[in-house]
Image (cartoon, rainbow, N blue to C red):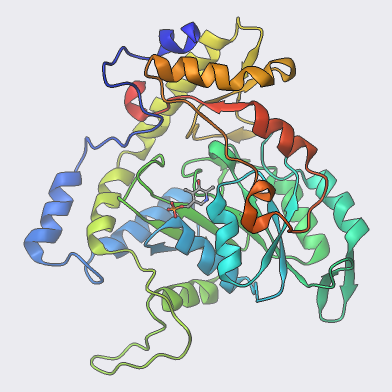
Length: 379
Ligand SMILES: *Cc1c(COP(=O)(O)O)cnc(C)c1O
């Protein structure tokens, strides 16, 4: 605790886990929306924000949405996730990754994480698929449940990239589309390339607690032009383009990002490099302050990647895991709003009976991870 205190400022109100930072053109662009009257579903900031996202991520296409969960839902629909199918998904993730599957009428099939990346473990997943998967003319099936396996989704936990090369290879071998939940990972690179661009589709979030915020928002990333067009179409009630006629050719959603939020996003994206630099400074300080401690270790970016260090986190030594509540209480007592990682998804009542592989690493990580205050302003 003293190590965390040494890194963080004294504050009477306490130090939150993650706060947004508005030091750029936020006021100017948002005011411009209000002055011009273009606050909602039309206006130029959405296009500008999408262009800037393409530039930042190198994705062929970026489609802004009202939140990251909606972006994930669109990714799944476009990847062909249909009612009754199963999707290989991490048990160590935020609940939205899995909820959006349930919105499609699909079931998660939980896979374990790697202790190194916290993302899906491709090697053990490969073994698991060898055991349970069966190719049929109509696609890949789970022999045990009889359901089609429609896709794989991986999460880049805390902004640390999952092992994408191995996951892409695995998905190719089984002819499964890969979807990346990059909600926490704007600015994170794997092999020099932005995450969210390795899979068929990727999702980002710009919720208030993410590295960059639009108030609420998200985006779908893809290199596939037809999928991009469909993502836009489904996010705008599947309305056919016409000056006055209302005609819709599919079940659509109201998932587009309002212009007001995109204006905030444009101003925030201009500052992303600074945010990323600040995160690295904070991560390095935590790393240094925690290095002498025996009972914990700082969670560093996996080799070959550049994490955005969205949430700086520590891993308690195995024999200290029973003392996590004690640590959290001590941190909160002095105003440091640390938090444990999510309860694993297979422990939630909605997903308790979902099929799964052995999840021992997830169980272990879930009992030992603690995220520390990580706002950009702390650097
Ligand atoms: C934040 C988050 C989401 C959901 O994004 P929202 O914009 O809050 O809907 C999905 N997955 C992960 C891993 C997240 O951290």
